[in-house]
Image (tube, rainbow, N blue to C red; front, side, top):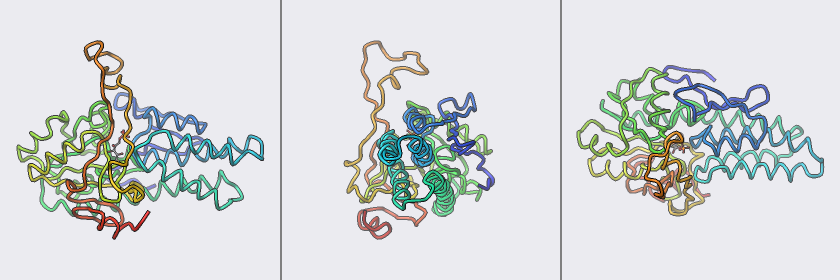
Length: 349
Ligand code: MRU
């Protein structure tokens, strides 16, 4: 895959018949790779956030399906499809909110339904295609989204939506990359993104690798930054967009959308077609992943909360479509998304 300016990182590779994952838990202190040689190892890596970001976990699962097919072939011939289906279900269930995981595994199931002569080879070709299509979609969304940023100004982003979260280039961060190279972004602000610190650890690292300066802020500082006039657009990704245009994304996104509307700041969601779930009518139908309380009560294993406190740790929230000014996909831009406009661009389930 060609690397262009401001885009040098690839988080998921197929290497030596294994799935190689840039270990995102260890960034930015350590750049190390985990090599998964079984489909279960890939599912566990997705659960444990070695690889994260909606499109990236879909791509990892697509490569995991290749390992699953090899494992099934090594077992009893009459049971191969049953054991392969069980492994695909484990990959699909690794995290619940990002629809890309389901989408990628479904695509691999459809590939198998075509009864290929060499299932692992066919699944590998399909996984490469999924990754290549994601990269192409990101570049297209980058171009489309950047055209909405018409005047130079600051942008604020949340979580990590960049090369690390995708096949490369990124969704929201792809738009920021494109607008930056067009000279229309004067400052990139990134929320630190509690509690996993995807903004502080990953977005800041990724932008530094690619020579784009970044200013971090605590999530709670975002409304004050908007009030100061430093930000023209909030640009975020998505883990699932439903048929009415509601958006599931990293916890804190909803608060950004409310604050953006209050301050007259644009709110842009950038997501490929693989993140759109026309089968769900609205955001309340999305399963929101809740992770362990320890992720809030401790930092790097060191307790920070008063002993005995409990914690509520939903890791995504729903932003109602009414708060979204623009939904950017590779198929086009929807301004003020609603059920009718979503249907016009994406059709039915
Ligand atoms: O829990 P994570 O780190 O997987 O969450 C990632 C996000 O919420 C991103 O904003 C989302 O996947 C869209 S980015 C391509």
